Image (cartoon, rainbow, N blue to C red; front, side, top):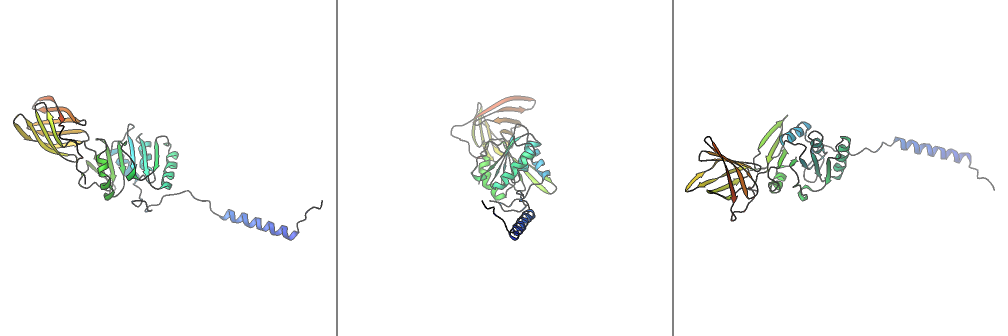
Length: 283
């Protein structure tokens, strides 16, 4: 068999080609992993990160702890979710429309050692059920907050909601904090108490504007307007006829105590069947 002989010129050309190809490959920069950039376009808003100091303050305002489930609406780079798990011991989930952000956040959670306590979901927050949350965080726009408001008002009473920069219109916050010029708002979802309630010895009629409550208390033939009516989640308090009432709302019942002078006694009320619960005012 005759051996194939490669001419010297051809060998030299091949060697030169291989060298050039290798040099070109070495000159190509390694592909960088995705890094979110401030002001990048999103589905509903541009993305800007919430400063870490304000993230901490928002979670402190909501009194987040190990028993909480925090859901961040539009979770971006995942810092709020990761902070809730790492610093406050909570379970947490981020809802984010950008799949690259979801992957970035998932890697960040692994790096911070909280992958087992957090989850990031690629989803549209307006089409996702977040009713399991005990704390909701967000950095959206006022128009988007108002769009979400009816859904938020249907969450379990006592659910804490914290927003960076943008409010909820007529629904005034229960608390406001500012950190280095950045503002955070806290709301506590109020129970639904508007309507007529039957007491053993009379009737309580309530009108509700989010967490503010007005109305009258009828005991026998005496009708007294209530004052300082307030809801903090499922906790109702008001004054009537010199007495201080407080109670816990449980769906169609209220149970609590009333202080008058130096005396304290129990009181209870049941929602009348002809007065169903309604949302505490929404657009």
